Amino acid sequence: MSSARLLPGGPVAERVLAEVAASVAELRAAGVTPALATVLVGDDDASAGYIRIKSRQAAELGFASPHVHLPASASQADLHAVLADFNADRGVHGVLVQHPIPGHLDYDRALAELDPDKDVDGMHPVNMGRLALGLPGPLPCTPAGIEALLAFHGVPVAGREVVVLGRGATLGRPLAMLLAQKRPTANAAVTVVHTGVADWPRYTRRAEILVAAAGVPGIVRPEHVRPGAVVVGGGVRYEGRRLLPDVDESCAEVAGAITPRVGGVGPTTVAMLFRNAVRAAVRANA
Ligand SMILES: NC(=O)c1ccc[n+]([C@@H]2O[C@H](COP(=O)([O-])OP(=O)(O)OC[C@H]3O[C@@H](n4cnc5c(N)ncnc54)[C@H](OP(=O)(O)O)[C@@H]3O)[C@@H](O)[C@H]2O)c1
Image (cartoon, rainbow, N blue to C red; front, side, top):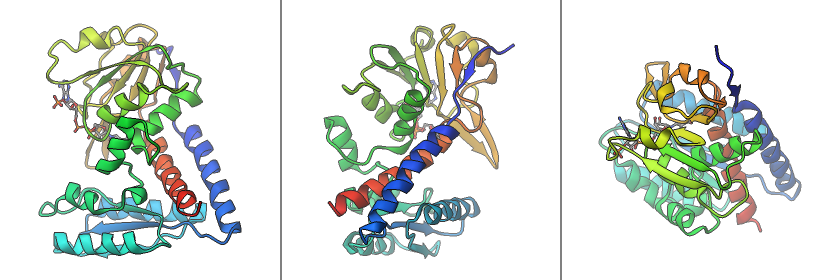
C-alpha cells in the first residue's frame, strides 16, 4: 500500500498563472498588451492541438497570441523569415515554435535564429549559457517547473543530495545546473547519471530527491529509490495518446513523496512558459 505524499503540479501551476495574470493586468493598465506568438509547421494533429490549448490559455491570461501556420513543405528559410519578422516586431514579446517540426527542418538552427529575449522555452543557446553563468534570462520550462514544484510543496532542496537520471538538453542537464545554483530553493548537491554510468542505481539509491529524466518507461523501480525519498517523474514517453512515465507506480510504496502519474511536472512546465512570456514583456517595457 502506498504511503507516499503526492506532489501534484496543478496547484503550483495555478499559483504561477495567478502571478502571470496579475503581471499581465499591470502591463495592460500601462497600455502594453503582452504578446506570445506561436508558430506551427505542418499538419500534425497533436501539435495543432497543443497550439490551440496554449492560444486559448494565452487569451484567458490576457495575452495577444499572433499565430503563423506554415505548410509542411515550408523551407528552413521560410521558418527563419517568420522568426525574423517576430524578432523585429516590438509588439511581440515571446515566440514559441511548436515542437516537433517536419523532419526536413532543423529545430535547433531555427531556435538559434530567435531573439534570445523572446525565447519562452528558455532553450536558446544564449539562455542555456545564461543559466550556466547564473545570469538572468528565460529559464528552461520543465526544470524551472520542477524547482517551483518542490518549493511549493515545502520539499527542502538546499544542502540535500539530488540525483538526476538523464542528461538531456531539455530536462536533466539544465535541471542539474538550476538546482546547483546558490539560491534558497536550490543549492543542492547534484549528481547526474546516464547510460555512461552502468551502475546508476548505486547513486539513485542514496538520493534524497530523485528526478527521473530519461524518457524510458518504467526505468525507475522501487529498488532504485531510497526509502522515504522524494521522487519526481519528469521523463515520459507518449505512445499515441498513452502516457508512459519513467517512474513505475510501485515506487510510491517506497518513496516519502512522489509526483502523481498524471498532473505532476506537466502543468508546471506550461505555467513556466507563460511566466517566461510575461517576464519578457515586462523586460521589454522596463
Ligand atoms: N513532463 C514534462 O512536461 C516534460 C517536458 C519536457 C521533457 N520531458 C521529458 O523529459 C525526458 C527527457 O528529455 P530530454 O530531452 O532532456 O532527454 P533526452 O535527450 O531524451 O535524453 C535522455 C537521457 O536519459 C538517459 N538515459 C536513457 N536511457 C537510459 C538508461 N537506460 N539508463 C540510464 N540513462 C538513460 C540518456 O543517457 P545518455 O545521455 O547517455 O544517452 C540521456 O541523458 C523525456 O522523456 C521528455 O519527454 C517532460
